[in-house]
Image (cartoon, rainbow, N blue to C red; front, side, top):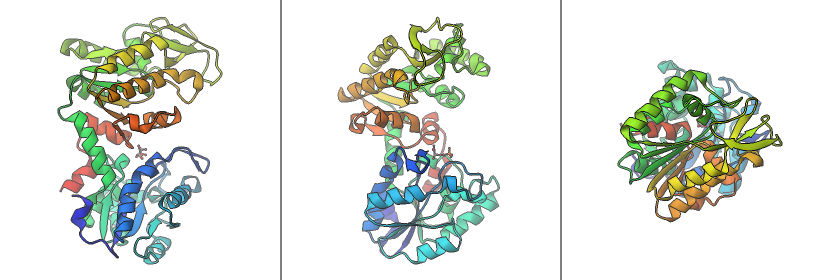
Length: 398
Ligand code: 3PG
């Protein structure tokens, strides 16, 4: 159901679940991509004269108020972007929330404090979540689910509240689902997936699924060392999930059987320590010296990955190739991003998924328009790629 299904919105109180889980340095937002992505739905509701009540989480406070996780910086930034003051309630559904909502005029926006300050939000006990959902629902006449990054969470403000109020998917959720579906349902081929990031164990379900769907899997980032170890190569002090080596061996065997091409780096930038200014050198991927750690894929690998992306028609990228936050270890991620931009210009449909890769695109200065879709979802986009049913989406379809 879309926002249109909610009918006339003027004067109605509309509760919107957004994903404002942005990276912070103290109280400074270092990447406001998720706030920007929430604007189309919020502007649309404002323009329609709704009284907009936004609920969102920030980080993982342990179910109690914690000033370090306050949404105050988000309220300020959102106000700047919307061009109107956004009142921040001091609580989630308490007296302050009720007062801020009651004070809203048509077309105004209020933000409730971090919904994870209330332990019921993430409770595994249905009745506890339902109780909080009831309190949220009492603040509104309709619900719009637009926090794509959290639709994989069965939480009160994402899932339970959608059962209590007339509910619809927001524009961001619709756009995300439509874009990711182009990869999950009948992708144009060749279909290439680039996976990076630190842990294989975060991506097991995705890899399982991609071994039956993708034509090529390009692996970089911290997780690549578990692949190199599975091939019997030394990895020095690089990130290694020793308990996943056998699983990865199984993946390599299955890929060989099914004809899925697994592309691994041929060279690695190995550093003496984990630091921006650590002494480092490029070494063959099968000869990482003892006592050194791989912090990026090497230049030959960057060129190889770009070449394996050049003729792809569908590309999904999740996870950086190296520690791109440090200049010395950003070249691999840059090469992959450039490869995707070039392939997109040549006609590929490309999706960047996962907070880190989306941040990398921005931090490394790429024009977002060079990619077909930059997802705001990390875990949510991975679970969609895994082919899972996401509770926050299923509940909207009911
Ligand atoms: C994210 O950052 O991926 C979403 O905001 C979900 O956050 P969570 O993993 O803490 O539920």
